[in-house]
Length: 294
Image 1 (tube, rainbow, N blue to C red):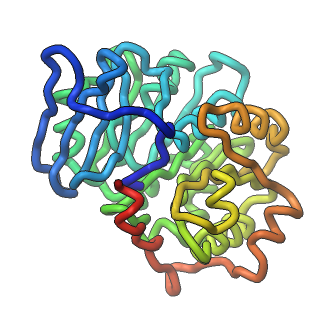
Image 2: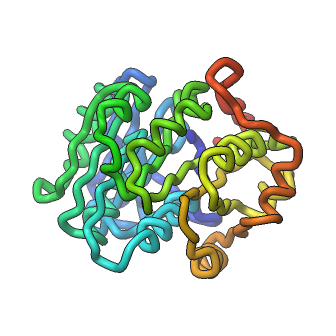
């Protein structure tokens, strides 16, 4: 999501030394790479002024945004440490999570699906991927790219797709999740970055939708998001096997910007009477308020 959660109190600027912002036009709008004044070799990608990704070229294991740290915990927990994975990234941004996976799990094979071909070229030019990393990028629609992948290939499917600041409707439905399940290995995990604000109707609907297709779910979010006090990100993980909820909870709670994890009955109660979303009734996630980007 544009305006993704970041560390509270971090200072952003034009960077130190000779680093200057890089600007370009991509399909999604005006792209800008802003140097991180506190980390040499680190950059924030913004689209039309909204932060999209943070990348540290010198240390790709560093994750700045809170939601990306939470997904990083799940990349760590889905299999034993250093074990290579087959990973699908729906939504590319600056390839932050693909870089993290390549650094933490060498020899992993990754497929990034990013519809904005101009953004892919912009990122490749200014924030090049490690040539040794086994990362393939397809510039197509996320659902169309998913349909091209073989049955049972992926250990992990990560959905982080936003058009502007909204998740497209066709990536919120049971039919979409049916194809996610097809691509996942039997023990694989589905992870989604969701964004919503009061009264959290979209988030509740996504929980119900995912619960209609997977047996185990857990959701991590800031306490203020859980309470419906402000717009923000939530990371949902789903599988057909037991999830390491206790360890995920511990890691999320100990983050620089702590969050809370719910699962089981508490998560079902939170979803309330929400019903699964089908293609015929799907709508995009809500537009965040302008205050999110300030």
